[in-house]
Length: 263
Ligand SMILES: NC(=O)c1ccc[n+]([C@@H]2O[C@H](COP(=O)([O-])OP(=O)(O)OC[C@H]3O[C@@H](n4cnc5c(N)ncnc54)[C@H](O)[C@@H]3O)[C@@H](O)[C@H]2O)c1
Image (cartoon, rainbow, N blue to C red; front, side, top):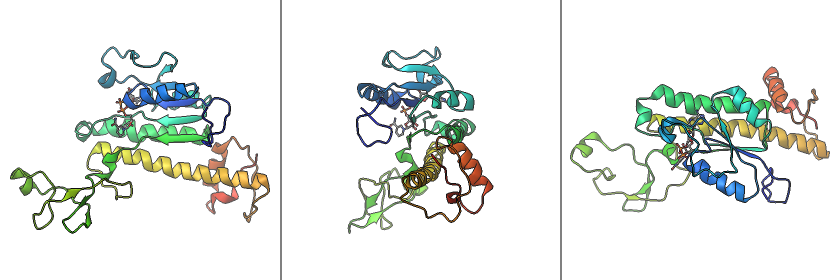
């Protein structure tokens, strides 16, 4: 059984919301979570590009999935779901590289703004875990090495090279480069609207998540009596109400650590 803190200890079933859970990745994750005994609600707008003009719930989706047809850009719909779940996998997205270069508004709206809506609702209706699907496209081209074994992150291929039909990456002297497995440490270099929007899903989730985690750790340490490093502890707000903590943070430019949340 999964536990909300991810420590693997047996505990009550964890309810896991999957946004975009009717799609390719989400439906497989749903199968896996159901095997672990987790109730799995899915919030999905049944995008006709993915599910056809009929916008029917697909047969491949497990019958035990709780199907909610809804829009990740709709704060009310998202809030309704977050109130009754322990964790969220955020998979809802417009998915396509070429299309993102001409449907710019749509990709920005679904991916960037959809994630912003989710995060803003999460600050007021927090859950134990948020997992967002990023994508390798944020790194642009992969990592290569030259003939001396030096790692190279090549820029886009020059137009002249492509016009000659040479599509493999080459070093400045024309020698071919050898592809390497590309780690996440490779600097990001998004080269499409889709890639840019995936980066704009990943970064804010990590940023808001880090702030929320820091606050939760501070709360836990203070509650245990293990830590009292805060020069001023000025506010008392319920543990579950991180939204108010965020309000306090905004009101106090001298740092969120002073707005300690008490259990
Ligand atoms: N498939 C891959 O190889 C791959 C690789 C890297 C990252 N990803 C990411 O994983 C996630 C899932 O990818 P996938 O391949 O399953 O895509 P998919 O297109 O099969 O599924 C996406 C789901 O999101 C739903 N959706 C779209 N817009 C929505 C909205 N506004 N509100 C609610 N639901 C919405 C669609 O109806 C669909 O069911 C995406 O975020 C994608 O960028 C996928």
